[in-house]
Image (tube, rainbow over all chains, first blue to last red; front, side, top):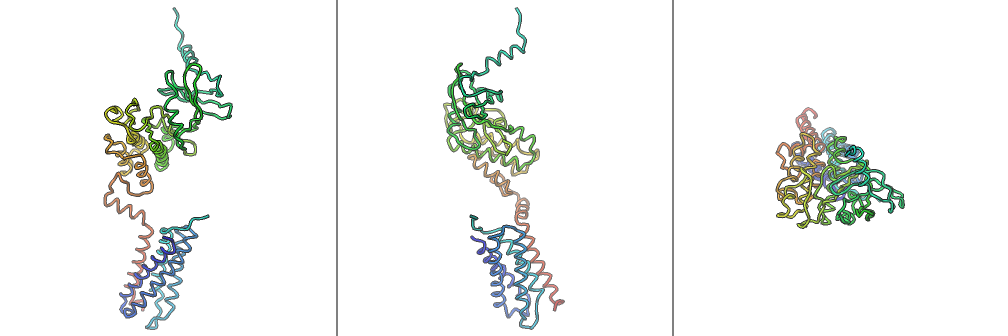
Length: 118
Length: 294
């Protein structure tokens, strides 16, 4: 399995799991479908980006750093969109997004095959 | 009647044993080893201008099986035979690559790192497995018959008692404690690759520290089991277990206890488990702080 595909799958699974935790926040429970889809797509995009970088750079530290960076960036983009109640949940979205991005980056470094170098 | 002094006798013995290579392209420089079947010399090959090892067999040996066997086995871990011939006194010799290095027992005295020792052991296994693959068993594996070069290259030497697998007609020989029990009763039980597995198990015991890790001790115990049926089926299986041990993975010779399994799982997935724990911690903190953050 190539690394972008590993990233795609890992990002999707982690995204769905992260989105599902929104169920514990009663205020957004009615928006669960949208949250799950958005979180899944965000995870997949981060996963593909981490996978593409993992093809070029073989370093756990780089994987963790890049993954955390992308996770933070995409979580910020999501958090900057006002929620139905008009509030911004920067901390609640960006902090877990940061850690999940790092996990995705780590997994793309550890799993999957990089193309052979000429 | 007067007796010759010991020194004179030694000199006479040396002159008598000293091979006459004057009619060959080799110039003997010094004796470097002596075994039950002959003497090994360092020599200069004047035609190809290189140093070689010359093994001169004791009287009565024909161009022996060792030279023929080695000539068939081309492997980086086996010294290649360059040439063979006979001397004016009838003794036969063969020239082979001169191995510059230390014997395994000397190497072990200087190298204390277990992984480094095990990597050398893996190379020994590779060379022996290659010979087995060509139907030859060494029958006298011991630290004295293994040379380690300065770059970590390994040579298995002295194939004087090597034999074809299942060749019941060949006489048996070996060196205790590296000699498998079946070698002394080989007329009843044909020898096979597991005979060398036994010796390798004993060599592995020599490599291990006084209190070895349990999986490693189990590998050595299984390899040197008195009953051939209790040993690894072949050298590749033994080498595979050593490789698993070096990679920190479970070995086939040892069943991990539950705490050992958990410790192994933690060691292999430390970063991932820490990241997942961090995620859970973040989620829990945010959950409990949610009212305060509004």
